[in-house]
Image 1 (cartoon, helix red, strand yellow):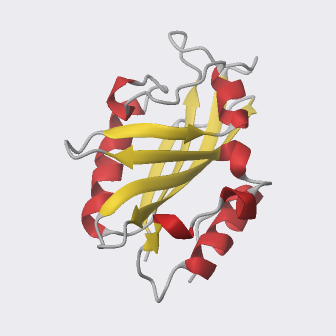
Image 2 (cartoon, one colour; image 1 turned 30 degrees about the vertical axis):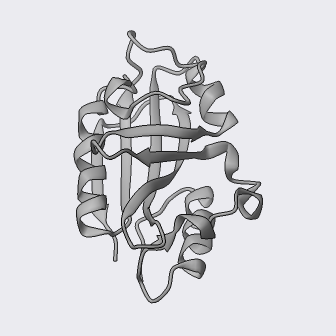
Image 3 (cartoon, rainbow, N blue to C red; image 1 turned 60 degrees about the vertical axis):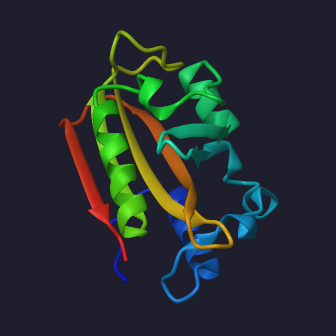
Length: 165
């Protein structure tokens, strides 16, 4: 499968996840071991899907906590302000849950003044790759994503989203 990935961390995460994904199916949450991903764990976010359908952040890697200068563990996705594309993430995660397929995003944006970002650049780019995770009965209970964030000096503002198979 040809991928749109740019960042080496995304490529490594994809390689790992695809190696444990059975025939293009959904990975069991119990098959995820962050020790297997220790080099990538600082860039990982894990969400719990509650019965209400809301996504609550269960785990946030240290690199993401440092970039945003805050720990958002325990926060609901719909309560976060992660920049100008915040409103696009929830529908993409709804699509991930509905279709049970990984979702890739690439975003470049101007750093907003109303959120704390621990960097000096006025623009940023990030790539996000997210996978659904299921429980033993097949229900999607979690989402795991890797966020490869970087400061950039300038870029055209863009938002790309692809559902992967």
